[in-house]
Image (cartoon, rainbow, N blue to C red):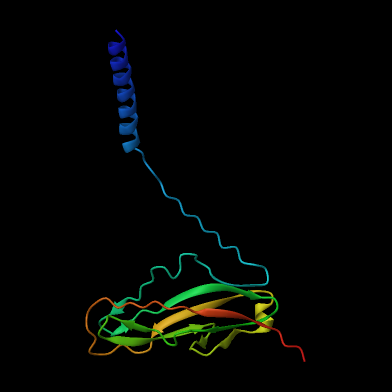
Length: 165
């Protein structure tokens, strides 16, 4: 009788555990990643569209042999002076791996390079303003090869303190 009871208890326990293991195999999971970028009140340079810069396209016009220009508005502010910008790797090149051509990057009508340059003056940046980023191809080669051309680059914005004389 004891052997039957132990066997039945073991069978019941095995069935119970087995079904929970089966249920665990059917779990659903959802991964959530949240980012919040809240600029401080003294200095910020932010694109109007938070998705800007993730997947941008310059469309090719084969009749005129040009790429479309990329434009985007930024909100800028520096209550303690002006704003300077530069490209740490100098002028970016749109490349397919074997052929490349340079891009012209301008912020607030100022061409950017590896040398920091003022892009928003003290008077405009103190209350806050808007500035336009413009990216366009300097020249598209006439013997351009087909393919996917890509580039990734960074623009560094510096808060430059006001100089009092």
